[in-house]
Length: 145
Image 1: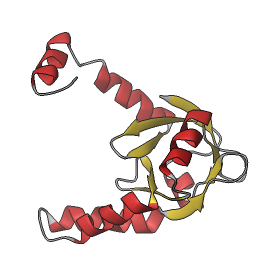
Image 2: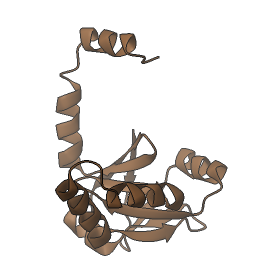
Image 3: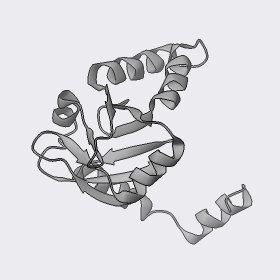
């Protein structure tokens, strides 16, 4: 979990570990959005294209797929990392997720980076506190290493 902040122009300064990770991927374009209008997500464009195909597919709940696709299009935009290691976060996304003028927690999950405002971070922390040693043991039995 990393702490970052958006500057007054809406640019998110990435920690150096993230900058290096993205450099190692050899991708310089990102799609920044939210699928649920609560948690921001930073995807490489190639991963986002996979998600677009998934959301346009016919398997599962069409209403959920369409809703997530709508949110992504409504709030999202492409950005690249500038020379100072910053990504421009779309203005509508910043407003919707209340990211302006406060700390943003960055959390790597699966193949994207999540941007959490303080309220969402605290809710996640409360949820995490409910995980027991037995829960972790069960996850290890299911394949967690």
